[in-house]
Length: 226
Image 1 (spheres, rainbow, N blue to C red):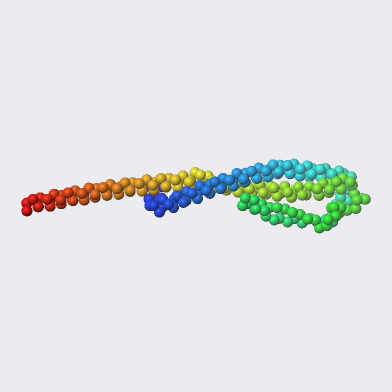
Image 2 (cartoon, rainbow, N blue to C red; image 1 turned 45 degrees about the vertical axis):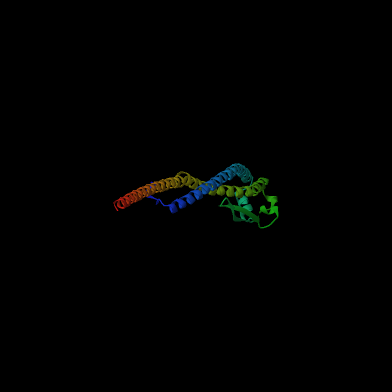
């Protein structure tokens, strides 16, 4: 395989050795990145489970209070109380780079700082259960945003882990073995060429020595005859 892909020259051997050094270094760095991504990913998964349980508990409490409020209040009164909200919430998303992965970071702010502005109705004519429901939803909002942030981060980091894993496997099982095979092939061919050159040089030397011996013998014979 290597014989059909590379030229057995010293320049190519140098290039393959540099490629191997780069591949080994890249493999080590990518493995470190994969391991760190996995560590942070598992931390996010654990946080995701905790937040989901907390958010679901808050939503269940809010739904239960809404059911109680609806049982006490008429449907028209309930709709009227919630028709015109007093408070507004704006959410901003800023990316945060974690191990070359841009994960979202959500922040929110309310239109006013008054905590009582979450109630868009007068407290004198509504059920206390409705107040509890609205308060439950208000309290669970930060956790809901953090849950959304964590779940999206898990998705992005999972995709990056998979991509990094494929790169590590490609380097470990394809690029590095192929480069090592190319180096062995080129080294073997260069050694063969060097041995062939040495054999040719030895033959030439023997021929030159033989010619010199014959020339000397001929000269000696001519001198004897003279």
